[in-house]
Image (cartoon, rainbow, N blue to C red; front, side, top):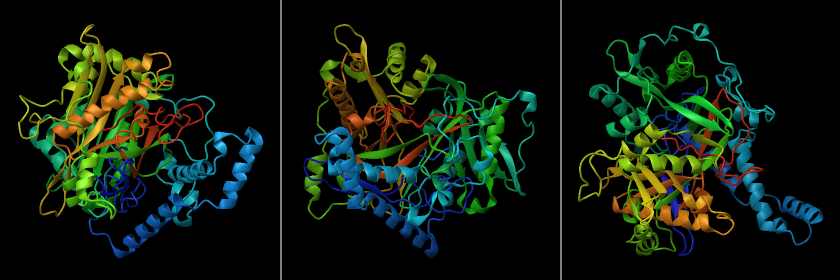
Length: 558
């Protein structure tokens, strides 16, 4: 996880958390340093392929320019004359009393539009234009939307599917001295090779202070959902000594994109050893996994990245809920500002000691809940534009298979090997499942810290509540209140399980409760992409014409 530098808030506001980022490389640039994603970059993006931990002075200077550019974009850089002109136009068209005619509202909207242009590659950093940041030689050859494309009148594939016999039958050639290897992650030694490669070479922050630390249990959970294929766990080895030096994975997923159901693949964990970034392995890895998916009759994919490549269908922003203040400060994950003491920060971020929904029937999910959770999930997720379609076997895997072994340990409140926590609310009278909430763990190594070696991070996963189906639930604030209670209890449970921070993105209904639950806004952005599918932009960190922020995206990528 990238280093986060937070500014502690006043008593009644949540912290602003800044993510230190660098220029994350795309498939066309394997030499760029750093990563600007706070969860594993996937598929095409090689933010997973972060550069050397000690960047050159030239690269440090480049990042400094980027940082200044971002600061200028986010700062109070909108000319007053522009604001005045927009306000006057709003008043002219909508009247003097229009809420949108407020000067601060207009200024903030203009800033967001500038950020959105950068995220979409329509504007660049430090004076770069769209062509400088948006053109990618590799992606120009791929069936993905491009920046100059007109919004589609009808959504659908970019290139038609091919019969199996027309798909390339042989693997793409690798550079000399390397060979393909299919990883059998059911075999402990090969699974160990994968998590050792990722733990040493995958996403880390600009200063190389934090780096994801994967476990065997996490990768088994993430890479072996129902229908998984061994042939989609692809490695590259050095021919002479068989050392694993690169990896990419795919798992099957059924997606609904607005009204269309797709058989697709979720691409993840693209990683190349740091010393081999000049070998141009990334484009070959992407083409090879595409070929293998095509052989199975699948021609669409979903992937995410912190870097901008052609072309995001949505962009979401990271938010962070501080839990263990002393450790986060000591590890330089956050800091105590001048107008705040650490004791005050501890009081401010201390979660409640009791669960709000305990009397409503909150308990851990069990096997007997699978059918009810699957139905509640289906109804709730119908409200978003892009979602995974989960059958009961999928629900069982996603929410129960990673719950660990045996009893919870007294010291941590966790089971050995646990990677996912899922809770349901069972109505005490009717015994109906009215709500569920889940979160998972992905820790990070704290590099070169004498007191702490591991940052324990929890990530909000899927949730649902039947309050969403109550008439006028949103207009009357019922949905916001229920979600605040539900996710608030998840934060309490994460704190009891000794997590240091609780993370979430601006997707699904998350924007309804982030501020209320003291999440701090991060600088990190996560871009969502579809391969060989054209669709209009989906509401993520910003609203669209017909959707509130978050409501376009219902996919949580691991």
